Image 1 (cartoon, protein in one colour):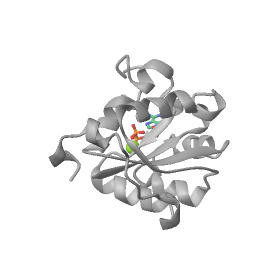
Image 2 (tube, rainbow, N blue to C red):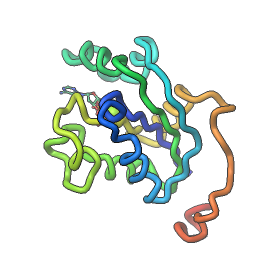
Image 3 (cartoon, rainbow, N blue to C red):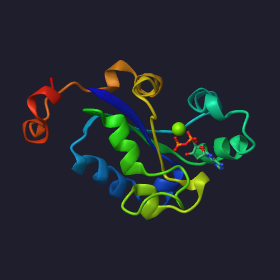
Image 4 (cartoon, rainbow, N blue to C red):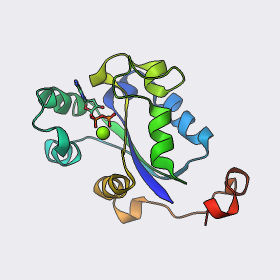
Length: 154
Ligand code: DAT
Ligand code: MG
């Protein structure tokens, strides 16, 4: 199954929205493989946001992401990368659909609450970048039988 790296950014923690956001992923039926709190440093951010380091807003993005701790999560689910991006909504929260995390809870592009991987390949890479092997848990989720058809969970 696919994996996605989620980061609940400093604004999510500062605004007390961590539970609200995690709830939305849990009720979808996604499995939490790993979850922890950490502080991000410049080197990790430069690797994570390598596609953005030459953008004019990068310095501000880096400072913001270092401004307080974040919660990182590794989530698993069938074709979950795309479903999570749909739950998250557009990068610019003012263009995000109502019902999405960003559409419901955010306004500023640079304060859009959550990161989620944007492809299956990046999901694998990003989970490996943020989690050590011992921090990811391999376990059966009993509700899988109710959430998936057999071929989807094999
Ligand atoms: P996403 O987070 O939806 O995957 P992205 O990878 O293009 O979007 O950008 C990463 C983050 O960088 C984004 O969540 C917020 C910030 N960002 C992107 N474009 C921005 C802009 N034009 N102004 C300010 N921050 C921006
Ligand atoms: Mg992105």
